[in-house]
Image (cartoon, rainbow, N blue to C red; front, side, top):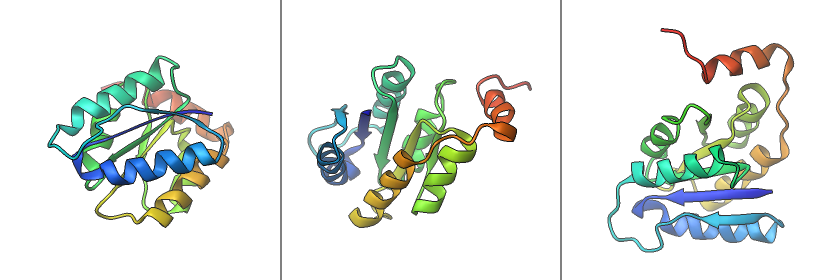
Length: 145
């Protein structure tokens, strides 16, 4: 799979470890930055990630920041993205199965490396269930207010 990964300064170390893990698992990884722990703004990297997935450059995205909250909000600004903030494997699997999530977010200050790897494994190994979930997922990209 082609996977894009991006973070803010708080999650650079976790991003590097997860990118290496994904490559070891045989995935093609596009590291969208940043490459240092110098302060950056998470929306900039969330938007880069969203564009990479929406354009087809990547099949899935992994968004990381201190809590995972800010970058997940940024990614979800793009109407083609469904980014789920996850903290354990069940929520990661359900994000794919029920919501057809095409990106996940995690917080580097809240999620350890082993749990983050378990979340990624669950996310990438779960298929969208379709059926009763499909119509709901379609509505996510076409809101009616």
